[in-house]
Amino acid sequence: MTAALDLAQLLDAVADALVVCDEAGAIVLWNPAAERMFGFAPAEALGQSLDIIIPDRQRKRHWDGYFETMRTGLTRYGTSLLRVPAVHKDGHALSIAFTVALVFSGDGKATHVASIIRDETERWKEERNLQKRVAELEAKLRATEREPDPIRS
Image (tube, rainbow, N blue to C red):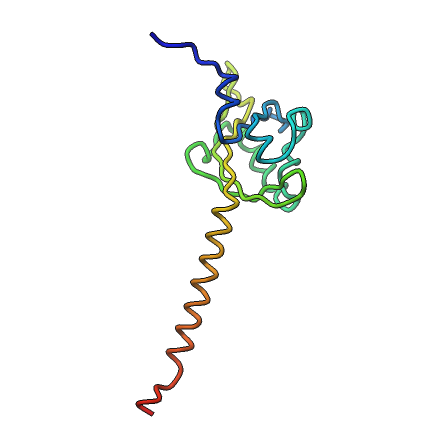
């Protein structure tokens, strides 16, 4: 026997943000994880543009890609992870990773974009710190290799 799937319960329970936008880019679904991640309550986010979470410098590129996806019904981010900066309600920067799923009308036209989003800010900071440390160690090693050997001098 299988139990009926309660989609509302699922949307509330998942740890990743689920954000769905219509073809104009207005938010039509904003789950509790999206609220935790970005700081906007559903009443603040629903009906708003995705600009509430997109940094100013990324907006043109985002909207160019968004509207091309809506026009063609094609995206490469259905299976490939996209990593981009985002912004929290309080203004602090986030690093997010997400995939998208397109929703189509009966006549095959893309009508909505569903994004499954994970906050990778801590992972991104750790990776950046590791890259910095590797660069420092490589510089130190190069400096050591250039120093004359006092025993052979």
